[in-house]
Image 1 (cartoon, rainbow, N blue to C red):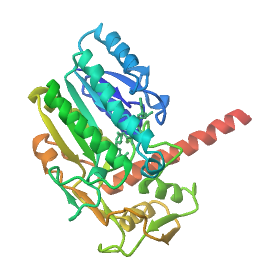
Image 2 (image 1 turned 90 degrees about the vertical axis):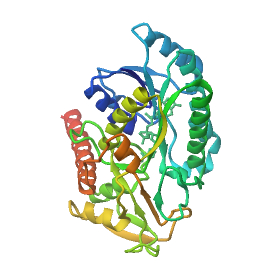
Image 3 (image 1 turned 180 degrees about the vertical axis):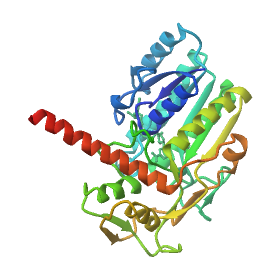
Image 4 (image 1 turned 120 degrees about the vertical axis):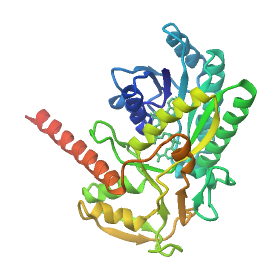
Length: 337
Ligand SMILES: NC(=O)c1ccc[n+]([C@@H]2O[C@H](COP(=O)([O-])OP(=O)(O)OC[C@H]3O[C@@H](n4cnc5c(N)ncnc54)[C@H](O)[C@@H]3O)[C@@H](O)[C@H]2O)c1
């Protein structure tokens, strides 16, 4: 199939481009490089530096691509996703994450593209009552980022009904790790997730890791989350694409490991590789005690079963970061010689 990947130069998008290429699909990438990087592009996937909120530019890309055959589907990863930032700049989040989806669907309609695979998030569940999230549960996000993603889901679902689109909404839980080849990984100036931050403390790129609250009603008092390796997540998109395209379906799937690990357990997993200093801080506002995916639907319908463990997740992130450090040092040596 010919697939357009919006946000394909980003962390999850680039891993998915690789899985799509491996599965034999014809891929083109649209990205404005706001948080993505040219380093994570592939020669085999055509690249357009375009912003998804610019409809005329999207129309042009789709026209060019249609000259060599119909476009079967779009995968939409492009978004802003830093929760704290979304609190201080909500309009930028709604513009990018909601208006961007509206623009994309308009352009898809013009180009007669029927299938859309969308990246949503566990943040749509908000402060979930039991901590075990199912797709049919009430969604009450607690920050502008989560609100913008839920609003985008609604735009997609209403458009699917009105315009006959086939859609697949994936709600990701905590995505982490790097591609085992270490060619791809999470490399950004602003990192907020526990796995890369703890790994950076272990690599002495930061002084310590802070646990925000150790008095939650969980076994060891720290928050429990569901961690999923980025390559497992990327592969789910290949399965979701094939399912949605073949069945002309409109579905929402949680993508998680269905297992919970506490913040302390994640830190311990990193400390098995290298030690790091840990400090205990106050709770952060709006952190639910427990968020775990009930991912039976994706397991049963898409036949998707994550392969990587928590220790694979931290190991690949550690190796990726170490390799980047070594590469930088080698380049510096080359320049100074
Ligand atoms: N990383 C996670 O843990 C996580 C968890 C849940 C959901 N998600 C969702 O997954 C998706 C991908 O996240 P990621 O971690 O790969 O982030 P990322 O920042 O690495 O990737 C986003 C990509 O989209 C591009 N982009 C952003 N706005 C754009 C626009 N208007 N036009 C064109 N390109 C644009 C960026 O340059 C970047 O390459 C997002 O939609 C995010 O909400 C991520």
